[in-house]
Length: 258
Ligand SMILES: Nc1nc2c(c(=O)[nH]1)N[C@H]1C(S)=C(S)[C@@H](COP(=O)(O)O)O[C@H]1N2
Ligand SMILES: [Mo]
Image 1 (cartoon, rainbow, N blue to C red):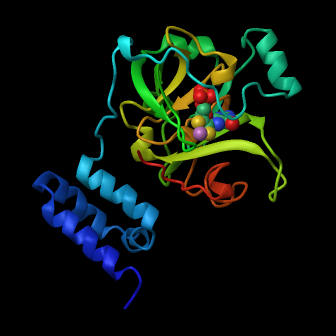
Image 2 (tube, protein in one colour; image 1 turned 180 degrees about the vertical axis):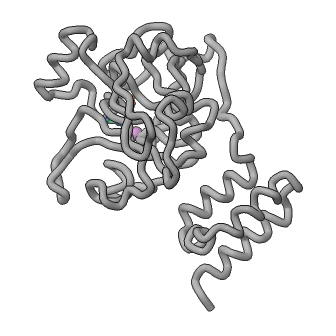
């Protein structure tokens, strides 16, 4: 018996229990070439299961101002120590640009003021770190989907990679560069934003200034801070450790659903 068999049965059970709208989505999924490999991996089963049960675009819970945590801990890098980042910070990020490239028709180079001119969204959500702490904060920014639409995805686009300014501990791959990636479903989720504001102020350095990702249905390490470049790719195995993120390359799961 192939190892995927029992998982397949579980998933079949999920499909049988789901409504007809979900079934339409499942049918499309079954037809896709990747379906077999999706089933081979428990982590991806979690992803499929979450999306089948909760719906592909279900929202993370949003809170009210009264729920804001009085103290929102900063974690990981709290100030990138590169000369380049410090120069940008000293000038209040006027020279900072977000590069958008890869599998796009129109590569972009966006100033913070460009991003702030676009329609924005504010959301109060709970951040859950894998280390076991949570905090509720308000985030304001522009929908990632809007930026991708401006850049116009090319056929073959599947993942969005976030390249950050900071380096953590340099290990096996000769780099400690922080990076992350998400798929297009999460990229176009309505709560997935590039945030330049936190709790009504500019995003503080400790929390990722000038721009960070908020992808609300996943754990803290997916919320890449200090964004410099967004790259659209068809696969991420050629990047750094090949697993799609700094912590993923060090053993954490790529899909960190909560
Ligand atoms: N660039 C970068 N992004 C990062 C990290 C980091 O070290 N560098 N740490 C991650 C982790 S593990 C968590 S829990 C959150 C912490 O976000 P906060 O500092 O705003 O609390 O950022 C995530 N994004
Ligand atoms: Mo974390």
